[in-house]
Every structure is written in C-alpha cells, then in structure tokens.
Length: 332
Picture 1 (cartoon, rainbow, N blue to C red):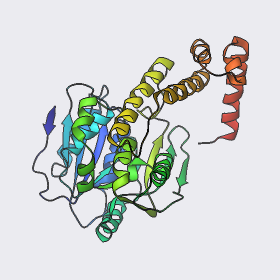
Picture 2 (tube, one colour; picture 1 turned 180 degrees about the vertical axis):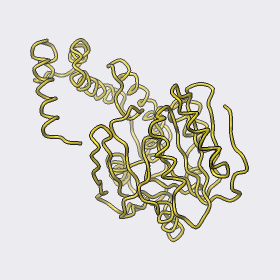
Picture 3 (cartoon, rainbow, N blue to C red; picture 1 turned 120 degrees about the horizontal axis):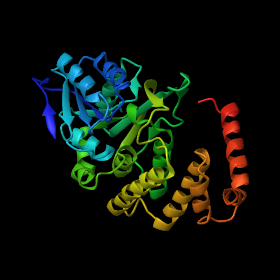
C-alpha cells in the first residue's frame, strides 16, 4: 500500500473516510461536498483507492495536490474489497469522530459535520449518530427525501431491543450520514479482522458489533445524498454468478458477527442459503436469465413463481410483466 500525504492538520476533530473504487465521474462531487463543509474545527479526509481501473486515481491525486493539508491517499497494490479498504482507512484516522461518505454519495448540507459534532459533544452517551437523507437516482435525475421513523435508540438492554434497533438501522439508515465516536468504534470493532477476512461490506456489520454497547442518535435533519443507479458493491452486478458469489461473501460477515455476539446475534446457515437462493431467483428474473432461474427454482419450494421459472415461455412472460409493473408504478 502506498500512502500519499503532506503536512496534514495537526488536530482534526473529524476524520472523513472515503473507500474508493472507480467512479471517477462521481468522486469529485463527493470530495467537494466534504472540503466545502462549514465548521469551526479541523477535519482530515482519508481516501483509500482499491486498485481502480478507470482514471479515479488521477482525480484523487489532483485533489490531494489541491488540498494537501486535508487529504491523505491510500493506494492499494491489489483489490482487497470494500470492507478491508474501509478498515485500512479507519486505522489511519486521528479525529475524535469518524464519518463516512462513499464515492458515489455526497453531502448536500454544508453544516452536516458541524451539526453532528455539536450533538455528539453535548451527548457523550451516543457512540454514533445518523440523520435523514436523500436518494438521488442518477439514471433519472430524481431526488427524494427519506426520513428516519425513529430518532432515538436507547442502548438495547435486551436481545429483542437489539434486534429492533438493528432492523431499523439496516433498513432505514444511510452510511453517508453516520458519525462514529472513535473511542467506541475502536473498543468494539477489530479492524485487523476486516483486513484479514477481506469483508465485502463495512457498514451494517460494524453497526451490529457496536449497537449493544452504546446509544444511537438520529438527528431530524437531512444531510447526505445516497447515489443510486451506479455500479457498486451494494448494487447488482450484471450476471447471476457474480451476484451469487457476492451474497456468499456476505455470509462470512453474518458468521463473524454471530461468533462475536452469540448472545445477541444468531446465524442459521441453512436459512441464509435458502434465502440466498430466493434472492438469486429474483435476480435471474430481473436480468432475464432463464437458465439460472431454472437452476434456482429446482432448489426452491413450490410456488407460482418457481413453476414459471421452470418453463421458458412462462418465465419470460412473468419476468417481462414484472419489468412493466416496475416501470409504470415505481419511479425511483
């Protein structure tokens, strides 16, 4: 790994992490939204490039030259995956607080850091906080607001409370809005393991690991924009095999969390594999892949959709009908 940094600020209050891979067309917007934050404290920006194959590194080098006192670059010699890339950046952070912003997301609120730091300073019981956010469909240009339904999560004292908290975080939260208290993050998360196992994801497994031990704050303000319809680790690849392999990689994260928190988080491998088969079947319908849809259907319990997947004519009729429904009834 090559580290590129000049005379960085001495005492940053916040370290902002961008785990980057390709997306030379969007990372400029991400960086600009961070360096233009209006705050009365110093920040640093740690960007890890995971062996990009486009000209993203040239873009990053240009920004590092423009903001040498703020930006530190980590250039990996090989592709190590999102979770490991993120962890390598986290280990470089010097701030009291750590925020995230993936390289297809951006912060539309220039007071994002100022508001969250003020909240965290006034409420030391919170290990991390989130905010409302926007979704930006880059394909259509449509931007929609998303408000969290719950604005305070107490430190979950029971397993049911923990599960409810995690359910809300993983289904409603946006990684680009998160601010961690570094002391909490480093107490409960082993980042060397993220590097060792090269986890494919970094946010929800981290939330699961720290949620039993801290309160979670939610600010009633929109600060970040989640970029949709770009290729990333959280969005489907173009073929069923790659899609299935990605979800098999996620399984290792589930196993890891269950081993670390057996009282709070249980993992049933058979249930996961059955669920994975259903997810892959749905994806095969989405990309009109009859051969793989039939393969997944043969592993599935009988249903109308499964029967359609076993018949070529019914498969295409069902899949095309689903695409038409999505086109006319779902706009984002």
